[in-house]
Image (cartoon, rainbow, N blue to C red):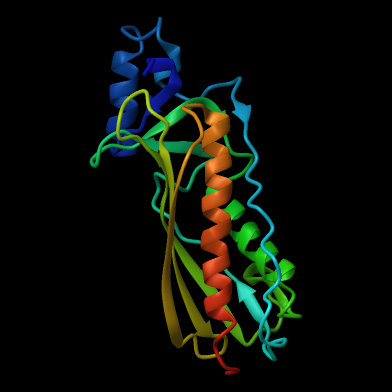
Length: 216
């Protein structure tokens, strides 16, 4: 795979990272696509497919607040992550999300509940509206995984969800939802489309699970 297709992610401390980048700047002056942010990145929009409303069960009698997902530092970014081995994480060059990934996933979950139609009161936790349950999530995986350098990767999305009572913050249930979708080609456009499908299926699993829980 050509080097300009992705960027390397380093797990150094900020001080050490700054030192190493400064020391290597001259050596890599001709390869600016390998270090630092890119000023002319293409923005790719996540548009998970709208899931059909549930065909069984009536409206639930409780209100839900959705917290901003937690994520490791490597995914709490607007960069589009990829993995070529089990021990490395890189980013596509010249490609970004329009916002930090946790914000995009929160919006996807909120829209999923709204589109489902079985819950009348759902909001973002930061809106501080009255709610019976709070849904908190952890983004464990959100990267394109390559098994061969030039083959189409799998878009892997794993989200761990916790539902807690709003007042006591007592966790009443957990679920781990994960999906892996093969991209149609080895291109960023195809990878983003695969992420759309994987995220939609993951969100749908979380919604169907949450709506089976009783009123607090």
